[in-house]
Image (cartoon, rainbow, N blue to C red; front, side):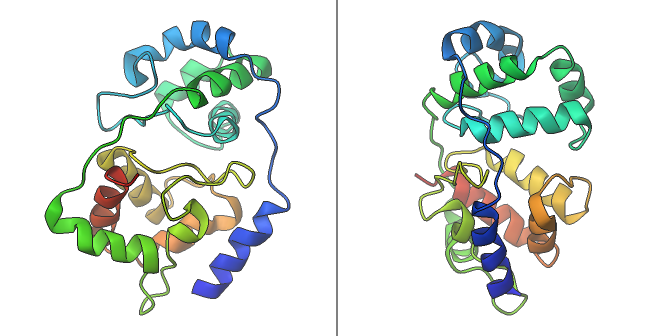
Length: 201
């Protein structure tokens, strides 16, 4: 299972969407005023249940906005926010937020060892692959394959998303990848790797 998922990661590189070109960060900054209430002006949200957008790949941001608009990713608040956005608006927002600097966090010391093990080696006993196989050793992600940057992301937000994938309440992952990965993960593993990601840089 682990080798299969790594192969899927690599194959997806050749067929990924390309969204990032053509965004205007200056117009994106203007448009982002409506995003600031939740995500803050520079994309570093204060509330840990809302994701940091600063430094995220433009391609990934645009993909998520498109998914919210098409109903492929469900969130009532975001659905309302993206409804008036044009394709160019989404490109501009992606360009703006990707140009901002992510603020880094720290992990709970007691969870670092377990979190690092999952992130860097996975769990061979249950077939959970290493997170870094797709998201990179320092959490930088892969913009071509639409694998998001994870470093510094709020642990609470990450854990919520992993649990949603595990419960199949979120299903906009390519090739069912994240749902397959999170299926055998325990709540402790999810919490630990989310904490590790929050402190990763």
